[in-house]
Image (cartoon, rainbow, N blue to C red):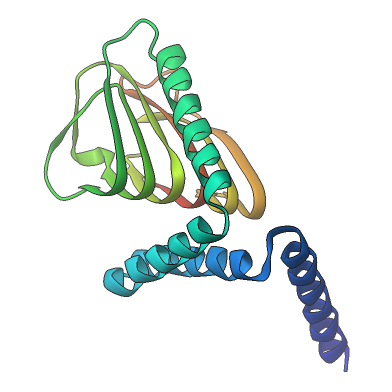
Length: 215
């Protein structure tokens, strides 16, 4: 009986939220955001083709419903990306990349770890820092965009600082997990100050599934 009441309460709350956001954003916009979210989830579970299709359809619906707003969000996001990259990498040489759709997989072969800023509208990023060849003792990575599925593996002996935020989605860093709306996590490994190799991660997406695993 109690479970039934609880399920009824949850259903009413969810239904109320859908109605509220439906009034504010429109029914088709809510459907499109759900499609983008499920698409990102399918990409994570190796169903890449259907995931990208859902993201593409959801994006097209949002663009058709709110073209001016979408352009404004893209311009604002890209402007903030340039500003943050320049401020963060003020005294360092860094690589900067921008793309509309990107699938980045640096988790299979050795790769060069250096100061870097990456921005994309829709991005799938997999990094294994245990396979990385660092250029410097301390490296800063900025990953930013609109929709992101980010999966980063970090060896335990590497010092790590993470600043992660998503408007819709989840952030998962070891014991720290935030899910839902307006999620922000700031995390630092206990060995950061004493580590010979340090990495600072700055992750920011509007819709995202951010997973940082410590080996």
